[in-house]
Image 1 (cartoon, rainbow, N blue to C red):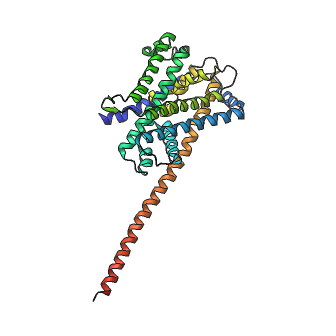
Image 2: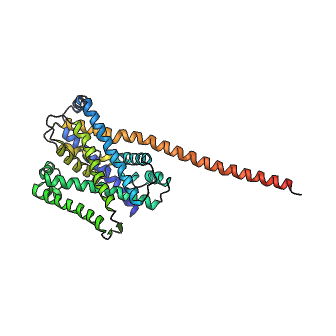
Image 3: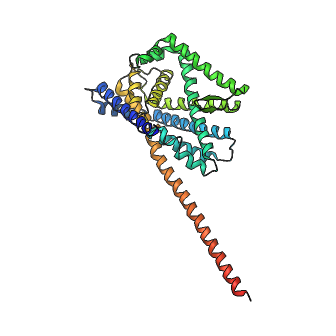
Length: 345
């Protein structure tokens, strides 16, 4: 069964990409996309490009904070911020582009943190805490948006499957937002009052200490605010619905892309985002999403490859040096033994 699932979910992801790209093609059919998108890209001011870069740094700094929070939960305090930041950056840069199931819970984090003395079980807990932190941020911001501006979800009317269309009704959206915020409140209460661990399908969730929970509720929204800022600053002022609307559309589109299991959310993210911004030209939104993909996905992915190569090269040098040390020690022992035998009467 597990072997079938190993092939099933990647196929689902690629199918989602194919369908989404076809929908995008239908959306832009008959338009001169290339020249118009390039025109929008060149019209973005240097100041707005700089703000988009700063938003990217904020997002990746918050992701590094995810790892730091998880390590504090484990009681590990001897790993430097530089190492944590590089490990987190590489993990998420690869996971965002290739798929979270491939790297974020496995090889990259295990290779990095195992070199610092963490066991496989500790790395598994670290991955779970990081995933939980992201989920908390999504639920918290999603709840706030649904309560304060429930009409934002009406942007997705006609795009959601039938079973989810009730979410586009403002009254229902506000009710869902209250439920979301209530769930976050229960989590915080469980942390403060020490509720019994939650056991979901064999997975045991221990409530963290209050200071860890508070850090989670700060770090996760910060990452989402930074990521949405990249798109907001890349959009023109004319027709721009405002940061709050962009944030709402980003959270919904990013969640849909993750749910689809599509590599990098390719096509899925763009289709949802463009469809939910009817007040702007499609090519303007597409240009902003290309800026987002470059700053948040492609450029970090390019850098992460070099980080992995350098890390593995250094690890290999350490192993070879360690083996050379053993060979030298063995040779010296043999020489000492020979000298002792020669001196013996």
